[in-house]
Structure formats: structure tokens, C-alpha cells
Amino acid sequence: MTYQARFKVWWQDLSQREQRILLLGALSLALFLPYATMWQPLQSRLHHVHERLERQQADILWMQQTAQEIKALRGSNPTHQSATAASGQSLLGLIDSTARTGALAGTVRRIQPEGQNTVRAWLENVPFDDLLHWLALLQQQHGVRITGVVIDRQNEAGLVSARIALERAG
Image (cartoon, rainbow, N blue to C red):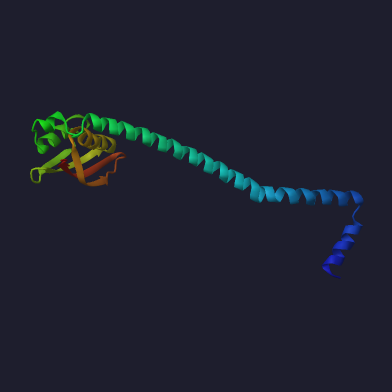
């Protein structure tokens, strides 16, 4: 007996109530399956894409506002040099005085001049955030460019050792 014939016999052996229940179940499954396998995942993905787009638009807005602030700050000090640079303090003196004070005190191992406009600095076990703040201060307030950086992670979380090449901009 073929599969179709066996199915027909099996179907006819069922009561009308059982046949209706099976038909309703098959219809429900036929409606639910495309929703569960296609529509719902598509809607979920679309929701995630919209959230990501909103985050990226917020990031762009923040970047544009920050760029305007930077332009305004550059406009107020076009040379990007501080009074110490203008007053003739050497780059070596500037790096030494700013690195040996504040959060970096005690982390400076060596500062070595390389010519008139370049200095190399070695710092050990310095908090990474403090290092970044110091480098930003040098760039923004003193017109110093970072020409090379090697940063090594230390065993203690948040601490690094760094070898930095700095150069007077301009």
C-alpha cells in the first residue's frame, strides 16, 4: 500500500472532531511558522539597525559640535603655543616640568633631548588615563606634537610603560 493510500485510510478512520482539530492545528502552524522564521527575525533585525543608526547619528552630532568647539579654540589661539613656549622655555624643560608634576610624578624614568626640537621620554607604571591627559595637555596648550609612541601594558590594571617621542610644532 502506498503512502497516500495509508494516509487516506488513517484520515478516514479519524472522527470528524479529530479531523477538524488536525486541520486547525495545521492551519495554525502554517500561519505561525512563516512569522516565527521570517517576519519576527526581520523585525528584530530592523529594530537593531534603527537603534544603531540613532547611536551613530548622535555620535555624528557630538563630533560636529566638538569640531566647532575645536575650531573656536584654534581661532582664539592660532599658534597653539602656550606662554611658556612663547617665552622661550626649551622643549626639554617643558616636558620635564610638566611630566614631573601632578599625576605623573614619580613615573618619569628618563627624558633625553634629540636635537633642538625633539625629546624622548620614558615613563614606567603610569596610569594610562593620566598619560593621555598629559599628552593632550602638551598638544593643546603647548603646541607639542607626538611623533612616536610605544606603550606596554603592565601587570596591574590601568598601568602602562611608555616611550614617547615629542617634537615642538611649528
